[in-house]
Every structure is written in structure tokens, then in C-alpha cells.
Length: 526
Image (tube, rainbow, N blue to C red):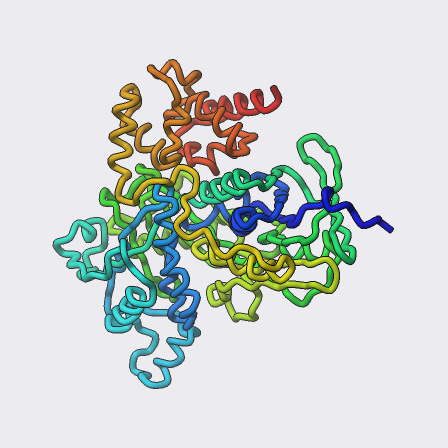
């Protein structure tokens, strides 16, 4: 039997999982004075949290499932988050084309209700129903920055130019874009700045539960070294692996489970010139987005399909690619084709298993369960990126039962690293960066501000010329930036930098991507 550890040998909170929920909880907890250790078996945001549709949104379609509380919370959060990270998040307008033949899922509560009282509708989405939903979308949450819904004449507005001529009318509403993987890293950085220990490439082999503490056995996947840590409380934020961690790693019995739902996306060269997004409704009742992406591309997604298990790597299957191409081609005047696809990605959403009949219908609500039968265990099921901060606050409410008298909520209004400037100041920041570093290209200036905000100056430092930034790898990537990412953002491979910290892998050929990977690995081992 293990002796009770000394107080100095034990951390308050040990968090398993380096996705948005784990890092969000780590930041909030560290900011309230708890000692925090977080372990992630891969890179930060290496699974679900880097494979989203990149939106802070209320979830317009969730209104059809009467998930009003979730939608309201998410709508309010959009602007809270926007103010905290105006470099990696920004407002977007969404164009929802309307046609009298629109259909929606006949299994939704809204559909069943209308079928009962208006059987002649027969699964159609009438204009008044869409406008009612958008009115609720505008009014359920507080709006101070984002404009409300408007009607668009597609015969005269530029949003109609790339669309099939049958679409004459559209509704336009607001939501926000977010760089999802950077959001995770910035939460981890802020948690670390407040005292948390963040360990990547560190597997939790198993954990032993005692009356008053957990003993956690770890393996460094880079070196193979094994260590043991102790914590007063354990948080299981394993995402798709949450149920496996609970049962296999922690040896706990539970009826709680997740429903793994795969969401896949395709990226094609830019399909239109304006900066608005499209919200497309399908004959099967589903919806997809077409979103301006990385300046020169269009992102199309997402699908909803049940996924077998977390150990099966999610990929955008041929069937999903065909589905998304066909779906988008029903709207665009020039059909989208498979040979246009330059990249695909897929992620597994760990939704709380509420027994829904389909993946699309499964709840996006998060569920937190606290087990205090011995050393406390908090399990995090479900959740969505827009409500990650609220989930963290709810988690701290549970943690407060173990550590009473914690300070109250503090994250509202506190910017993430690089986000300490007003939402409407992005243009001014670009102009200042261009003036301070006139050798930068216009694209490099835009990119650096969008990725790093006010920290762009810390990266560029005293550079007077492009050559001062070291080796150039293409796509405006320099050794100076890679060194920053290695030292400050847990980058250990080219994939970490090119596909999670940035999406610059889209702009490099295989040889250039290999050069980035080689440089990073050489610096990590130095």
C-alpha cells in the first residue's frame, strides 16, 4: 500500500487530455490558484480540437432540436470569446440561400410538430420558419458587435454570382470564425503562464486511486522514460478517449458513455471572391458550410457519421468526399469536382450518448460527472468549441466541491496571449507591423497578425531585414518563427507547425514540408 504523500509532493489537479476542454480547464483552474498538471499523449489539439469547422457559432440547426439553452449560451459566448482573441477569431456573415423546395430532417422535433399541425408542409422549410429561427438566433443571445439578420436579393448582390440562378433570395446572419488549434495552444500557454505544467507526448499508462489522492503512471513517448505523479483530484478530458480512459486507464466502472461522430471536410481552391460564408441546406435535411479559407481556398463541410472507436483514425472517406462535392454542386453554378480537392481532414466529436436515433440528432450539450467515492474524479463528456470556456467554468464549479472557497469566475474579459487589443483594431495593427518591419510582404503582415496578434513584435524582435529572420522555408515561414513555435508553443514536428499551429502545409510542396520538419526536429534534439 502506498503511503499518503507529503503535501509538497502532490498537485491539486491532474488533467488528462490536451484538447480545448482540458486546456480550458487548466487555464481556469491555474488562474484560481490551483496547482495544475496536464498530460497529452500526442500534440496539443491533435484530435477533435484541430478538426472542427472553425466556427464560434450558436448552432442555428440546433434550434430544430429545441436545444435553446445550449444555443443561447453559445450565442452569448461568441462575443465574449471574440473580445478575448481578436487575432484568431473574427466576425463573419453567413448567407443562407432560400428556395421553396427546401426540405428538413423529418425526425427533428420541429418537423414532427409541424407535420402534426400543418401536414400540407410535408417536410418543407418555409421562408417564415427560417426567418423565425433567425429572429430567435438574433434575440436569444446578447449582440454588441455582431449585426443582425438581413434579407439578400441574390439577383443583385455579389453573393448570388457564384450560385445557381434558381436562388433569388437569401437570409444573411452573423457568426464568428476561430483558428481552433491555435485556440487550444493559447489556452495552454496562458495556463502555463499562471503556473500550470503542460506535458505533451506524455501518455497516462494508468492511474491508481487511493482514498485521498491519485497515483498517475506516465510514459514520455519521445524518450520512453516512465515517471509517477500524484494529485488530489483527476480530470478526465480525454475527448474521444474519455470512456476508454475511464475504464481502461483508471479502472472505473461507469454507465456514462460517448457517441463518436465523425465530421469530415474538404478544401478546394477559392470558389468565389467575396468574404462571406454560405449555409447550404440539403434534401436529406442536413446542412453544410462553404467558408473562405486561408485567403486562397474554400472549406466545405461537415458530415455527420457514427465512428467505430477512437483508435480508428478518422479520414474523409471517398463516400464523404462525394457527398460534400455533390451537396455543394447543388448550389454553386459551376459544379465542384473531386479533382479540385487539395486537402481533406476529419475529426471525431465525442458527443454525450443520449440515445439519439442519428448522429445529427445527438446532443451537443456537455455533461460533467463528479465521483467522490475516493480521491475525486471529474469526467468531461461532450461539449463544443464555442462553449469551451463555459464548460471550464462548470468544471470549476464541480472542482470547488473538492477545493472549497476558490476564487470566482475570472476569464471573461481576460485576453489570450496576443489578443490584448480591440476587435476593430486589426487593420491598425497590420499597418503598424508593416511600418515597423517594411521588408515584410503584405501577406506575411496579414498572416502574422492573424496568428500572433501583438506577439508578432516579440517574434520579429530587432530584425531590420528579411535575412535577420534566418532560413526561409517558403510561404513566409522563417527560422525565427519556427524557433518561437518550438520554444513557446510545444512544436516538435513539421506536422505540429504546418497543420495545427498554422495551415501553411497547404502552401508548401512536399520537399519544403520535409525541410520544415527536418529543421524543427534538429532544433528539438539540440
